[in-house]
Amino acid sequence: MPSMMRYGMTVPLDGIPLAEHRHVFEELADLGYTDVWSSEANGTDAFTPLALAAAWAPSLRLGCAIVPAFTRGPGLLAMSVAAMAEAAPGRFAFGIGTSSNVIVENWNDVPFDEPYKRTRDMVRFLRQALVGGRVEEAYETFKVKGFRLGRPLSPDLVPPILVGALRPGMLHLAGREGDGAIINWLSADDVKQVAAEVGPDREIVARIFVCPSEDIDRARAIGRFAIGAYLNVPVYAAFHQWLGRGEQLKGMWDAWQAGDRKAATAAIPDQVVDDLLVHGSPEACREHVDRYVSNGVTTVALALVGVDGDPRQAMRDLAPQ
Image 1 (tube, rainbow, N blue to C red):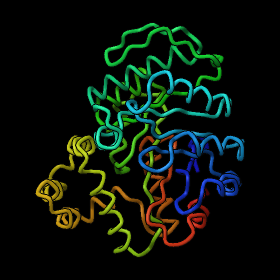
Image 2: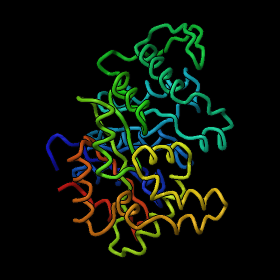
Image 3: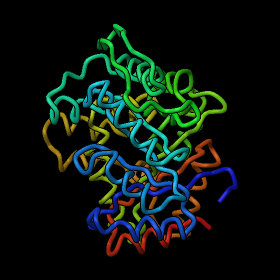
């Protein structure tokens, strides 16, 4: 593992209750992992797993990848971020992003309006609020009247704010007003194109989906299912159009729009699966992950998918060398 690269795991691990994660967190630290990264879709919320890790594994850095900008009010979000930063002083990174119309509108009944501006406004609000400033502001996408955080952070404990980003507008925001970008569902070769939009001297966190299996047909079947679920969401479809993968994915998109899910997944080329899903032996997986780092990723956040057996063995097999 390069000395300047951080190497993390997405938590919680599937099939293991949160109450039983103490040994998971402790072993991750012992294995040489530097970080744990949560997510927030329809499983756990982003903060609870990290709060447990803060208490159980004090050497790990903790990160959210990502919290949607729409699903919490500004004041509540500031309290959650500040509490996490206070629980893990100097070792918490906060990731915020637009999320998607599926999560925001379909699952949470919140209009998915002006996602770029909403994320930008939340970043600006948090910059003011976390240090205890009184916020009286009419942002473009929401208003805050007289909010002041009751437990403000000292400036040295304000966490880095990373922006979940896909296309140039959000990537520029991540580099201009954030402390870096969080990226996912892209190939190792795509990283160069994405990192160039963020700019220099910014953290680039990549959630990298890994199926540690040498059964190539099984791994590709798992990959097709996941790609179908993600890359038909409009924000991800637009991302891959921008990356130049439009012709490769046209068959999937056409079949999906026609309502034929089986044909859609079958239309995904092997090359796309092999580019977007890391799979194979532990050694092959590590070599593939190293290509992401060589192309500009500074923090790896592995996300295990399709694990056949105990996910703790997979985290051992994929531990940094």
